[in-house]
Length: 423
Image 1 (cartoon, helix red, strand yellow):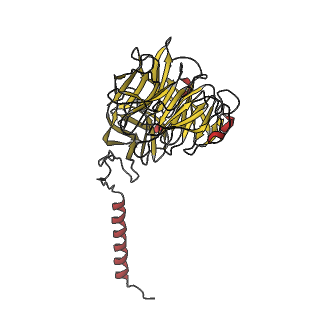
Image 2 (image 1 turned 90 degrees about the vertical axis):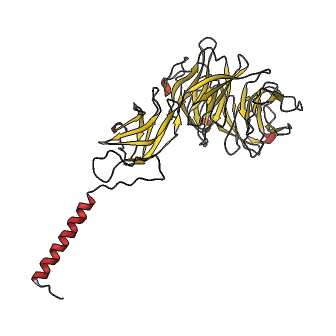
């Protein structure tokens, strides 16, 4: 091995030390890069040092009513929820949970439109775009000449609705026509739903007297998808039996769900019927499949994740059912009242119907003539607030959302349809 001369050895050591010193100094300097493809990231955050600085990648939804739950994704948040201080438009928000990559917040009731700011540790980051806090205005959309109880929107902007005797199509101008062309004598209809297929889809209705789920084609032809005898039996087509099918809701795959007394039944587009949750016993018990218990079920809805939500008019609560049949109580104490609050602290009077909105919330038609009527908002964590009440409401029941997210409510007591516009 070649031996270095003393002068050469000293020079080599000094050069190596200089390189290490320069590298170490470079590593201590933070480096900021704005991401032109991500408008949520603040390119100039308040930063106290270190390379593991927090950052906001995005938040969802980008707009919503007060009490909406918003999920913020990013990096290097404090995993302890209480160590993250979040404001929306300068108003403190409730932090529900946190991890290094996500923070869940609830939009405060007094929030205003503005950026989302997060203080985690001694670092504060602020979104470049604002979270838009929506407000609502109410108007009478239509005065009906025929009694309608439940509604759903078609792609052409028309509404479909039903009363116990028939199914009707309602144009935006208020024209009401019998959709099934008088070709079929119904027993007693309660729920209806529209299948958003390509072009003009089918309408499904529940005939609670005949124990059937019916399908009406765009030509007005009525056919039995499943059922035909009263009872409880799973099966295909007319082999299946329903006790009292009432509510109707469809998922994005075209499956139909109905509340059948104290059970939730699922019907595929080919007529295969299974019992998703509920059994012989009546109660307010959470569980899986037939182990869960319900009371008097009526309204139901399906959210974008495929979870089903039902209103129980007997036990005065809102229940959630997963696609695999797992049942939990989302909101409601079982006591009677128009009381807002989180989960089991909230109270309902007569939750007759429910609808999932585009922000992950549920809208519930509630109340009676003694207590007054109300439209309640239930967020995904079960916190309940009152969206609308007062004399403008009279026996609200069926509800639907148009593509712009506006809410339509059937006021069965005055035979009108109200429109709630959110801006």
